[in-house]
Length: 364
Image (tube, rainbow, N blue to C red; front, side):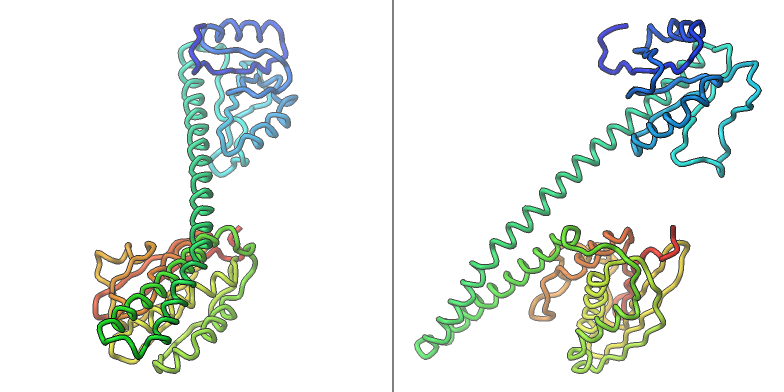
């Protein structure tokens, strides 16, 4: 056996010394073989049907500890086996599945190697995947911490800039000509918009870290709270809101209120010249609920229907519509935290329907 770092370790859980020595000799040139008769940390377990009952519980614990990294167990089935050990059917699998493959004695060397190598490749791939996932999670945490720190630290200087600009405007108002007043107005507006963006970024960065645990949540109550927050705007625009009964889901009620509030606010804001009309409905799809908020507003061009959920993406100028461009990105982040997804179906000039999914209470 060479010095290849990819050599895998296989443990032989075979109690009979003669059989164990024979299998060790068969595998020794290709793998690192462990013959200790207690379950160790290795890449693959090879156990015979006579020994299997003794090691089953310990192996199951080991496989569960490794999950989601693949931990293969292969069973050698002998001709004299009367226990009729078989692989479970597709609807009978325990989780995690304990026995991944069964080979019959006498062992065919080439067939055995092919089957062991297939399982070992799958194990290496699962370990690499978990490594990449861990690194990605670490990177995401670092980015979230950076976004939080940057946006938090920017709040005070931006507040100071805005305050002093407003102070200059009030104190020297009579000394400024029309052009200077216009320039100063642009500066104040820019500082205020920057502060709104920083506040939004701070809120966005805290979705995962500051959110409450997901608990049984009545969406009718959540919607009522969102409508109360938007009461003034609804009355000013004389918005017509139709609503169906909404379900109870597994969620964070404060964050879901933000989702409703942002989607309803957008439906009113982008209603065009007509009186805003909004319809809120729910439909059960398998283990999830689909919540839809439909309007008859200006709509969204097809090429923009994905980008609207990105940070700071605006389809209209600040002169046309207010906002920081973070509301829909915030909705997406919250829905994804609930293991759901959000999308929009729209036709320009004929309105939009925003739909997001949430786990049903009885989904498990």
